[in-house]
Amino acid sequence: MAAIRLAIESDISELARIRYVFTMEDYPELQQNAEGEEQFYTTCSAFLERAITGGDWYIWVAEEDGRIVSHMYLQLIHKVPRPGRTEDPYFGYVTNVYTRPAYRDRGIGTKIHQAMELWAKEQAVEFLILWPSSTSIQFYERSGFHPSEEALEKHL
Image (cartoon, rainbow, N blue to C red; front, side, top):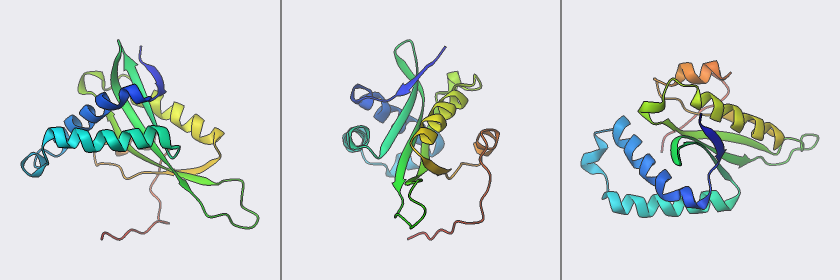
């Protein structure tokens, strides 16, 4: 049974390795153009250290036998206060959701999402957003996400 918890600094190297592995799994074409693996670990580890200690990023992990088997990241986005609407100071950006292949279809991702959502409600997060991959849409729909026509995006 996986234990769900927030990531801590001692998880950084494993989280960086998982990020590399699952990126290569999902985007094998990046292998040709990617920076060296060690350089990636240095860059990613620095990001994760800032994320874990900084107060705007929260990373939930599922751990079995001392090994991280799944994770979900949440970035708090601070909203500009509005008169009469100061009770919901954040919205949340969900990203970097991954479960190791051998641990899929066991409900671990759902358990992580439930823990993250409960925490977000306690922090007065107004809503959560994400950009799903085509293979993850059903997972997010089962968790209560739905398409929104309110957002626009522009790629730079």
